[in-house]
Length: 536
Image 1: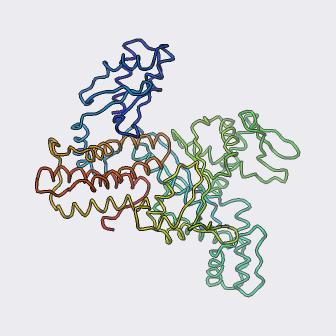
Image 2: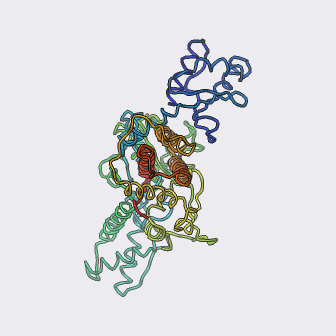
Image 3: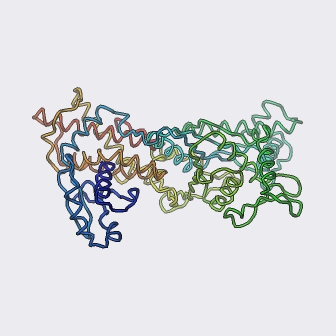
C-alpha cells in the first residue's frame, strides 16, 4: 500500500509537471489510528516548491488520490493527508496470512543482492561475554531480516588467530599448565585469567603429561579449544555463520603481502622513521597510519586491510561490519584504506555497537575479561532464558547504550515485554486447540465490526512494511516494537471480544483473525531469534 500511494502521488506530480524527487515522498503509519491507516506530508514538502499554503495544496491533490481500496481521505493539521483504507481490504489480508503461514511477510525487494555481514569476530582468547552477546544477537537478527526481505546474506566471522594477543594466550596457557603440574604458575601481566584457561591446562596435562616441550602445542591447543567453545556458545544462542575466515590463513596464503605490495605500487605509502605509513589522510582520516613498524612487524591495520580486500574480491554488493563502541574512530582509516586499494568504500556500512550494562535490581554487575570475572553468554542465558536474552538485546536501537535488566527479564508477568508477547501467542494457540477445526480463509468478513478487530487486522497488514523498514534501516528493534504493539492489540481484543461464540460464522472469522495474529507474531519473533512456546 505504501508503494501504491507513492505511485499515486508520483502520477499526480508528473501530470501537473511538478519538479519533485519522488524518492523524498514519505508515507507513514500514524501512531494514532484516528489519523488514518497511512499519512503523508507531501503537501508541506511541496509548499516551498509551489509557494502555496500546504492545506491548499492538499486540497488540490486529494481529488486525484483515488483508489478502490481507499475508503476516504482527510486533511489534518497544517496539511497532512490521511488515508483510511476499506475494511474489507484490510480483512482480506487475513486470508493471505493463513495461506502463506511462515512465509507471510517475506519480500523480494532484495532481488538476491549479495550482502556480507561480519559480526562478533571476538578474539579466540576466552569465552564470549555480554558485549559479544549484543553483537551476536544484532548480527544474527539483521541477517534473518535481510534474508526475509529477499537479500542473499552471508554471515561471516573473522578469527584473529595471529598477532600478539595469541602469543599472550599461549603464554597464559603455559603458565596455568605449569601450575597444574606443580611448578610456578606464572601468567603475563597482560595475559588471560579466565577459568577456561585453567580447564585447558588440565586437559593438556592429562593428554601430554607434565613435560610439554613444544610451545606450539599451547598456541594451537588454545585456539582450537577456545574457538570450539565459541562455536558451541553461538550455536546455543541460535547464531550460525556461513564463513569463518582466519587471519593466519590470510598470512599463509599471501593475502597480507599482496595488500602491502599493492599499496606500495600505487604510491600510497611512504617510509618515515624506519616504518611504512599509509596516506589515509588523502581520504578523510585525521592522520596517516603505520602499516609496518620499524622493527619489521605489521600493525593490526595491515591484515585488516588485506581481509577487507579479500571480502571485496568475493563480489558482494554490500558489506556490513558490526563493531564495538571503541572502534568508532577506526572507521575513517578503514574506509580511506579501501579507497586507496581502488575499491568503493561506500559499499561498506559499519554499525557501531554501544555498551551493555547488566543490572539486577539496583546493582550493576561488573565484568572483566582478563580477570576472569566476565558475564558470559551462557551465564546470561542460564539466568534469564534464551528467548528473553535474544528479545532484550534486540529491543533497543544499536546506537543506544543498553541496560539489561535481569530482574525484569525473568518476571512471569505482563511487565516483562517478552513474556507479554509470548503469552499472546500461547493464548491464541490454546484457543485454536479448543476450536479444533480446520482454519481456512473466507470470502467476506462481515462480523468483525469492532474497533478492536479492525485495529488488530490493520496491525497484521502492516507487517510487510515493518519488515521493509527494518531491512532498509538495519534496525531489528523496529521488529521488536512492532510485535509488542501487535501483542498488545491482541490482548485488548481478547479482553473485549469473545472468540468462541454460538454464531459459527462469527467464530470462524474471529478464529481466522487470531490465527493470522499468531502467525505474524511467530514470524516477527523468528526474525529476532525468539521461538515462542505454544503453552506457558
